[in-house]
Amino acid sequence: MRRLSVVGAVAAVVVITDQVTKTWAVHRLQHGPVHLVWKLDLELEFNSGSAFSLARGWAPILAAVTVVVVVLLLASVRRVRSDLLAVSIGLVVGGALGNLADRVLRSHHGAVVDFIALHFWPTFNVADTAIVVGVLWAAFLLWRPGSIRGSQ
Image (tube, rainbow, N blue to C red):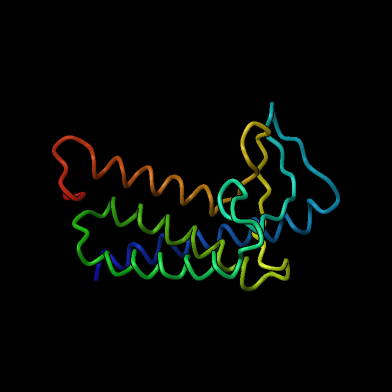
């Protein structure tokens, strides 16, 4: 139960942060991009596909796959023996739910709001970042020497 609470708390922080930043981006960046530093810009885009804009126009299928993945991740939490692994699952779940909220609740025809532009990488958002960091962190925890299934 404790690990499920950790996952839920992390996921909630990610979803809130993601949705607040996307709302800001939609309102502020519709007037044009903002240059921050070097190749980092804030630039409004709408992605109707998945990562790297693959499967464009498949929003309903992507939403269904997201729901299945979130349910499977939440079901796996009871076998998690590490708070750090629970945090990584929370990052992935929160990112998935943040992008799912865009597909279902925003009026952009199932598209996800992206706004962080590096110009040598596809434009992304906070939810995408949480998913990548969560997956990489989980992989590190599960594959590091002496670790079996993320136990501490």
